[in-house]
Length: 379
Image 1 (cartoon, rainbow, N blue to C red):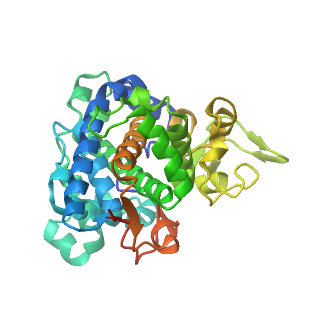
Image 2 (spheres, helix red, strand yellow):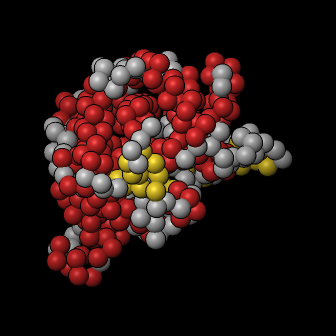
Image 3 (cartoon, rainbow, N blue to C red):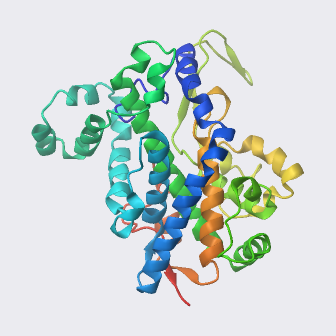
């Protein structure tokens, strides 16, 4: 969908996908993410400090830009030798967010005509800029990502799997999935928390009990995972934000599948989009209402409902970065709400325009005239 037919996301053959995915498995394991949580916390701290500075200057904060800068720095530092430093740039580097929206806008065309992008890469840049402006951002980024994943070069992958071109495709997929998808969930989650006084008060009490002072050392990822109310909010954020809204096809190559009275022959593509499950009122009553209580208690009701939570997909094709994404949601929400929950409010934001899903570009998108979810200090 992004001109990356050989990336893990686009790999069709099961054995090839398994081989390519296994090379990254330890890198994105829960244990590895826990070891990396200090870097995530540093990004959250920098985000909060920048928000503090903007608030003191009387400026509004675009949460989509702010969270995309944070998640972008986290995932690029994890995948590259160093991060892009988006949080150090003015106004949270809005061009990075807009860049990914531009890339996503080409996804449907490239999915239906996968030959277009390899052909475009043979053109000179000036030609693409002039005659294919909608594709120019994707074109330039694809050419720039040439120095990623050095550890994989020493693995036992096949030569093609370790080729620069294929690794660039994985790089583009991981940076996009690790930044924009997570930032959308964080921004929408913050909106639902700050616009519901009851949710905000209960979360603040839990966070203030666990962390009495904002000057204290932040709670570790392991400690945050033990907070039931925050845990329920994380699950509801994932449910209501979908993660990925596009149809993700699966193919069973050598077995027929029986679906009620229908027999689907081997090789039949089968797909279902996340909203069909997350918005099923038989599973989640009042599905478009943010109701974190539906997951409580986490050990019983929450555990039973989680089999219907497919924001990261499921099975062998489950999102490789799910542990990284979940950690950023927990640490991001805890950091921002604990610091600003009693002094920030959502402003100039219309739910139907700026929060609700309007169209699908792999990631759920709001209306085209949306300016983002805005937050302001009212203290």
